[in-house]
Amino acid sequence: MAHDVASATHGEHEPTTTGLNHRKMLMWAFLGSDCMFFGSLIATYLVYKNRSITGPMPIDVFDIPVTTVSTFVLLMSSMSMVIAYSMLTQNKMKAFRIWLGTTVILGSTFVGFQVFEFRTFANHEVKIDCAHMEDLTVLEQKVAEKCTPGVHHVEEVVPLTPRVNLFGTTFFTLTGFHGAHVTLGVIWLTSILLLSIFRPKMVTPERNLDLDLAALYWHFVDIVWIVIFTVVYLFGVFEGY
Amino acid sequence: MQETNQINSNLAHSEEEVHTGHPTALQYFKVAMILSFVTALEFLVFYFEWLGHWIIPVLTVLSVGKFALVVMYYMHLKYDAKLFTGLFFAGFGVASGVILSLMALFSWFVF
Image (cartoon, rainbow over all chains, first blue to last red; front, side, top):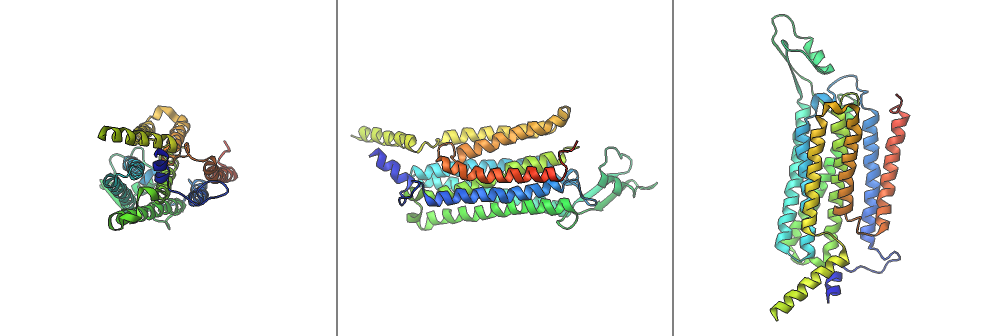
């Protein structure tokens, strides 16, 4: 009896030579290949780091507290995702929908943070107080050259876009592709949520593999962000790196 | 009778956990709390100027810890077939190799 329940909650699949579900194996193979994809983007970002000759640098634009909050949001979405999966396997459909809805909201919030960040970078403004010009970055020193006798403040819009410098190109490509992955994940999870509401027979404990695959993809974008947060953001602002 | 059904139901659930080997919702929550704590620690370490160049290995270790927790518990690799682990880490190994090779090629390790 107990075994029947256990088998049912895991979903039956056709016999395979490995004894493993082919769909799940395909998903893991895809995630392995996506690792290589993001690996190449991270490598490109790293080798071109500190090679920009103009425009804003990481230290000028990164806002670590804001990015830490967005990282926390994505980590919490991973937690709500696994709890949603756990609720589905226990046939607690109401709780499953609530936790999956929470994941969608948190994922959308993360995308919102990224849009906000991109917009802020594209409208980056350098403000210099001509009376206090200590610890200026290279970009700030350049803007500070406009400080002449009688001028107290200098402001200049120095946008960071993919076309401005190598940092902009590699940064927007890397984080843009990650954001696209998160957006795709949000669409995927939303479609499962809507199916569970309007076509309840398509989302059941017996068919939990559909959600399991989506969850694997979701956690993958989370671990990619863990790497990006450390390598691009935290290391990026660190002097001498 | 109702009590017996309840016991049978609980037994089914406990056997299910043994069969699937997946963590419970509470364990997932605990992992999330550890991940949040490590993220907060990363944020704090970032402002420890006295760490100097040691900040890189410290942040790397913290990041690897978070990565391992998500992969082992949330992605269930700790409980799933070893072949899945092989498939994933084959790609991950190639990616790491590409990153290190390119960094070496572009003189990152020349001091």
